[in-house]
Image (tube, rainbow, N blue to C red; front, side):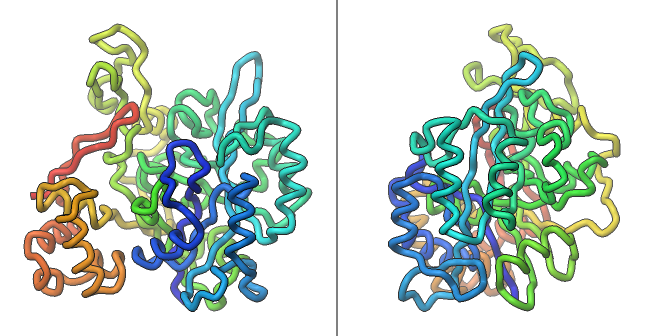
Length: 398
């Protein structure tokens, strides 16, 4: 069975997230996109946990959950992101880590243990004064089947390998618990071919998730599996085994579109390609630039650009359909004009992923300009002004 999974999202209880996010709206958004496995996000937050318990029921023995009385084949996996803040060698460290578990009954015990390290309900993604190693020890002692992975590993502020982390390996970041790390989330500002330049990462599976803060962003990155039995254990094992027959591919943002790809300084409207220049000071205000993902990959890389390891999981770049339509018709993503075109394509093809993977001729029946834009994406004929310091990149498709 084909499974398209987004394993890292947020609820409306996380900072800067849409108040339209609830369990039922997540199911509807997943259906539109073409996703059949989605994280609940933020399961540690007491108000969101209450909504999950009110709206979800166990899906037999699969280890997943589903909306009560729903006939949709869309499953939820219990997931959350945790921000850890700790000191090492007199330096502060901040890392974001994602957690997936099978049993909703374990959450109260996890909450009880982690509440000793910070205000667990202050945000959907709690900030806890605890090391990543201690965090993993607590989680795995309570939920032995927990699947734990570093979030958006290269982002400068909270990625395990980001510029401000102070760590140059996953082993340094997670210490003795690194042995329980099987996968890394590449984040929006990097893709697999960037990560393949760093040989120390070969042992981990590379996964991609949306980190969505609103319903429209769900599935902007995702993972495609082919498993005989749609269950928690089979999906997690497909990741751990890195078997291309079970883990078919990841669906990726163009990394240049991510908001931390280049070095830059948003306040001064300045960005820098670290491939061409190596200057970490803003020439305008003379302050430190925010060092982007490409710069950090270059620092740790021990392979040339374009290197592909043996038995690597394939990937493909996609641009969310509403963004494509917005560029083509030159209207804002949230305008009625974009919504009208989007709905016409969904009505024709069933889901967004189906539309993006349909033929030029089929899409042309709805709109030839959109068909041409999607064809360019399939051929990687896309020009992008790269993002930097919290500013998303900009596309040129026409």
